[in-house]
Image 1: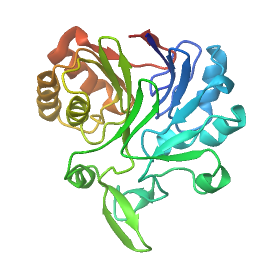
Image 2: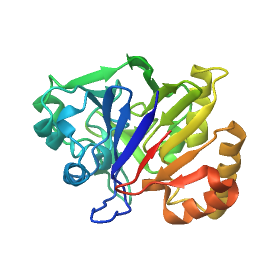
Image 3: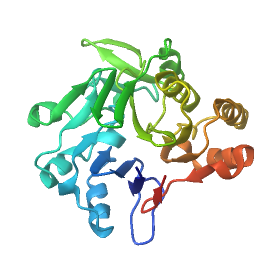
Image 4: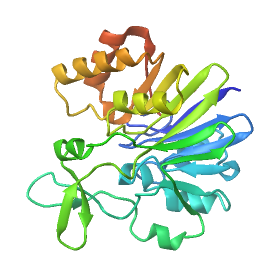
Length: 273
């Protein structure tokens, strides 16, 4: 079964298409069509129309994690599509914050969206098959709050308490092909190498044909990125498609370290696996 991915939104603009800080992917897998994330605005829908991709025929949507640059377009999606459920991780809530300075800043899903469209939201279990060959996998790695603290990302608990984000709201979207699996995780806050290992544990003995998404390396040092590249290489993943929060400088380093197995994402790009 073939897997075709079209990039509706990425930081990098395409020919006659606008980009924005965010990610949205239109995925075709056999007879199923999936929308993974909706970017920071309704731009994904404008680009889909220009690319000739019909959002009304999407069978189901998936939110990779509960941040605004991946969720803000879903009100628009529900206008375009009257039936597709939106699968979110069980830990998804309106409680994601950044702390760029002294104060916490809300960075989560549109406020009230889960009430406005209560009939469309499905809370996925940590490991859930949503169609033949399509699986959602939450994190199984402990201690991810260390990553949250490093990234200055927090979850609000009650009115005044904030704890480092452990990314309980993040999930991987995995597709089974005849010769292996393909893993999507739009920001990979847990670390793409960690996520690949989680997928390997869920699919023992399977080839990891590709890891697709942002790797949140735009704010990392060169040394960090090179060490990360070595960890990713050690997993044996065969291809990497990355953009968004990876950043141009980190992408160039990954290409130096990993060669032609690294492919860049860009608004308007379409590729098949």
